[in-house]
Amino acid sequence: MGDDDVVVVGSGVIGLTTAVVLAERGRRVRVWAKEPAEGTTSAVAGGLWWPYRIEPDDLVGAWSLHTLDVYRELAHDGGRTGVRMVEGVQAQTRLDELGPWAARVPGLRAATPEECAGPALWARLPLIDMPTHLAWLRERLVAAGGVVQERTVGGLGEAFAEAPVVVNCSGIGARTLVPDDDVRPVRGQLVIVENPGVSTWYGRVDATSHEVTYLLPQPGGLILGGTSREGDWSTVPDPVEAADIVRRCARVRPEVAGARVIEHRVGLRPGRSAVRLERETAGGGVLVHNYGHGGAGVTVAWGCAQEAARLATAAS
Image (cartoon, rainbow, N blue to C red; front, top):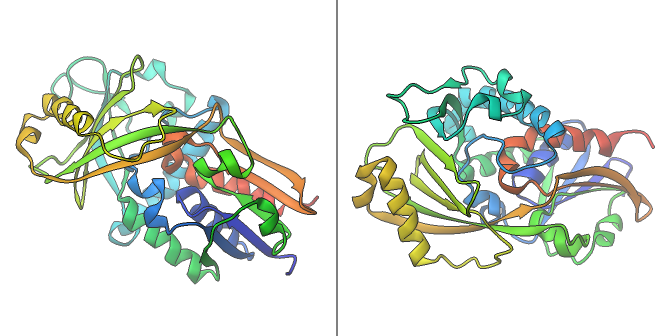
C-alpha cells in the first residue's frame, strides 16, 4: 500500500467519473463495486443533463455547469462517449423559477408556442446514452492506470486496509455502508419503446405528485418516463404504472401510443436531503464522501468528481 493508493467504492457514474479524475491526476485507483457499472442505477438513468431534485442549491449550480462544459466537449466524439447535444423543451418551467445557473446555460430560452404550449424552456442539452458512457468511463479509467474490481464491501474499514484514501461513492448503498439513514430510495420506472420518429427530448415535472413525464430519444429506443416514488425499494416493473407512463407520453406525442415496447426498467435513485460531499479522517486515513445525488448524478458527475478529487488529495 502506497501513499498514492485510492479505493473508490461504487461503480456508477459518480464513482467512475471520480475515479477517472483521480487516476488522471496520478493516483493509483481501484474501484470496488458489488456489480458492474451496467448493473447500477446509473445504467437505468434516462441520461438528460438537468439539475433535478438535488440539493444544496448554492453548490449544485457550479457542479452542474462544470459538468455541462465537459459534456459539450465529449459530444464531439459522441459515438465513443455516448454524449450527444439534443434539442428539447422543459414544460411547465420558467427561467425566473430556476437558480442563477440557468443564465449560464448557452441558448436556454423561453419556448415558443409552436415548440410547446404553456410556460416552457427550450434548450440544446447533453443527452447521454448511459450504457455507452459508462463503458467509455471504464475504458478511460483503465487507460489512466485504474482498475475495476468486482467485490462486495462489508464496511469502509476493508478499503482502509488496502489504501490510505477512500472515496465513498456508494449511492443508495451508503444507507447501510456508512450508515446514513438520510439516504432513501427514490424509485424510477421507465418504458423503452421503438422510436416512431421522435428526435427531440421533452420533460415535465409534477411537483405535487410522484409523476414525471419525459421522452428521451436514445440510440437503443425512445425512453418514456417516469416516476419518482420516495421510500419505495421495489425494483420490479409495475405494469399498471408502465401503462400510465405510455398514456402520459402519448398525450405529448400521440405516435408513441402504438409503439412496440422493447423493455421495462426500474432504478432506485439515491435520494438525500442534500448531497454529501465532504472529507473526514477515518480508519487511519482520509475518507471522502460523494453520494446522495438523487436524480441528478449524471448532471453533476464531473463537478462533484473534481471536488471529491480535490478533497482526497489535499494536504492534511
